[in-house]
Length: 279
View 1 (cartoon, rainbow, N blue to C red):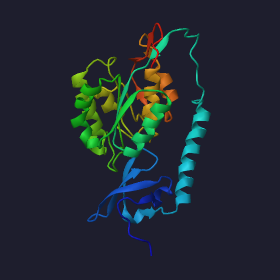
View 2 (spheres, rainbow, N blue to C red):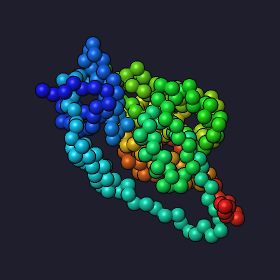
View 3 (cartoon, rainbow, N blue to C red):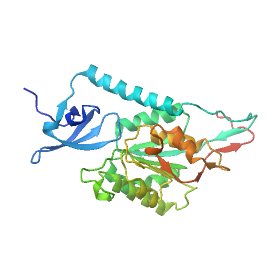
């Protein structure tokens, strides 16, 4: 006899062949619908209880996680995303001052992964775990506090079964859209504040219309946990004298053009002379 599913359990969906591991975040006892957040993806979903299987086997969970990472790695190789271009010429005594990032994330575990990546890339980033529905309320106060060059608004999202391009048909796109609008009330110049917004399957067009420079997901696909960081990395490494290549941003992302899109925007890296040495 299978044990009763409870909040916090790791599960897979039988109807999808158990391809994605989810964590149970809510259960509607009356309807028997279970609300899910991706364990390795920025995806939200729901499923009936009888479509779920508890994933207790740590080895199996690790196997699915490794499969996901390896599959993404193969995609990167096939698409040539792993080719890194070096800066042309030598910087001499010039220094680089990169733009700063404010990262709001609806998932605490994903936020930690992103902050670790920012640290690895030597990008100054301030991160906050804020549930998606609270982000519109808190974004302006944090923008005033940090005055970042790049704002990341992300978490989990997904299309509901009813489908259709209406904000009500997405789990969290409406909160991302509202957060972008609130940010633009403070800074309307799209070159002064670069905004990335969205998660898995988010309403891309609505996010761009609200004022985001870059967003997910044009083809409503799932995006990778670190895609927002990949976008920010290109922006803060591009000179303010140059327009960030949209193609470069897309190619540098993990999800590609189906998952990430955007508009022309200026870079956020400045040269200094002489080079500024930190104590």
